[in-house]
Each structure stands twice: as C-alpha cells, then as structure tokens.
Image (cartoon, rainbow, N blue to C red; front, side):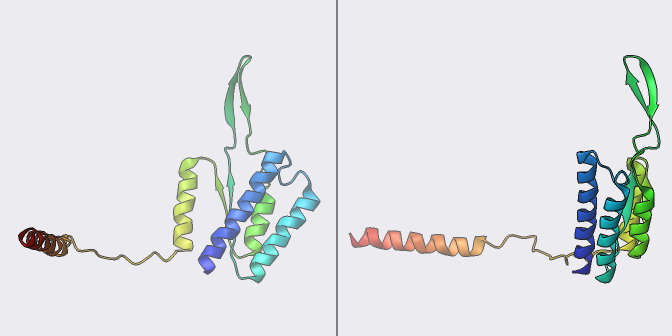
Length: 153
C-alpha cells in the first residue's frame, strides 16, 4: 500500500506542476504562494512517511528554426529546481534532472531500484488442454439420448 501511495503522490505532484505550466504560471513565477503549497504538500507526505522523488524534465538549450534563421532557446527556463530539491529532500527522496529521453529512462530504472514494487506471483497454467474430456462425454450423452429417442418413435 505504501508503494501505491508513493506513486499516487508523485502523480499528483506532477499533475499540479503540469497544470501550473498549462496555465502559464510555472512554479517559481508566483514564488511565495506556489512554494508554500508545494512545501505544505511535501510536509504532509513526510508526515505520512512517503518519499517524493522529483524529476526536472527539459533540455538546457534547444535550437529552433524559424523564418529569420536559427535561434537558441532554453525550454527549461521556468523550471524551479530549488523547489523540486526542497520537496524531495524534505520527504527523504531525491531530485533528478532529465535533459533527454535517455536520461529520463535511466532515472526510471534507478527509481525501480530505489523503490521496488512487489509484482504479482506468476501462475502456471497447464500447456495441454483438457476440455476434450468433458466435451466428448457431453457429445456421447447427446448422441445416446438422440438415438434412444429415434428408436422409441
């Protein structure tokens, strides 16, 4: 149950951050109000013994082609790494930075090692099908009943 809570907490935390980004008020733009909310959420998680692992996603710089030529932009300029670090450290988690898909994949593999999740036990099924036996008995009964009715009439 604890592992599921961690996943739900992470999902909720990232959903809030995505919502901020969609509204155009990325965390850090309204520093006091957002920081208080995020740190309060981290305190609640720590009080319930939940670890939050935060991940900052985005490249440091990116070249964008436009009609007037190429220009460098920083897609992560609104990323508030200080808040992500504070939230992670206050709950006993860690902050990770992913600049590309490979780094993000490596972070997920590391998180699987840090917080392993119990998998369902494997159940073994017979490889040979056994439905032929009851089916053949049922067909034999149907044939017997059909033949007995034909002989009686």
